[in-house]
Length: 143
Image (cartoon, rainbow, N blue to C red; front, side, top):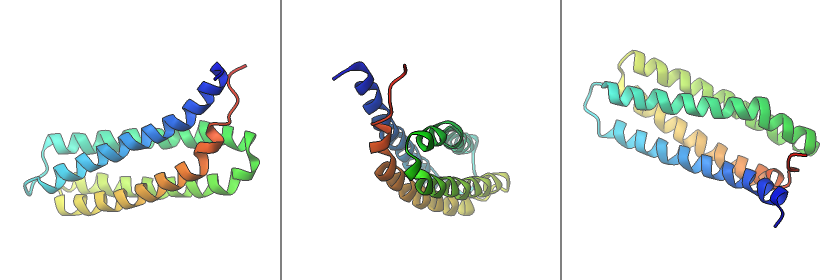
């Protein structure tokens, strides 16, 4: 396999690996929140905020770098990419809700919001992988 082909295949594979890490981190966060006493402590707050910030940065990178690159190389993906962008807006809204639950020290609401986030992300990640990995694996390497 040529270096360019290996690099291209690595892009799609890396997306799957990134999503796997987010899934694992969200599972750990939900487990931590479920086992937590009635009040939120600094560790849970930090874990939640760190996870949400990393997810936000990932989606910003997709919206501003990855998706435009895919649109340029695969114009037929525009409807898929628009759907994914809209899902990013939904995830950002849940992030705001999580932040508000943390601000209000509302563990019950935090748990509910984490459940909403998990459901949304599972669907989002599955769709994104199904629709984009093959295209990512076909991107040309650097020239």
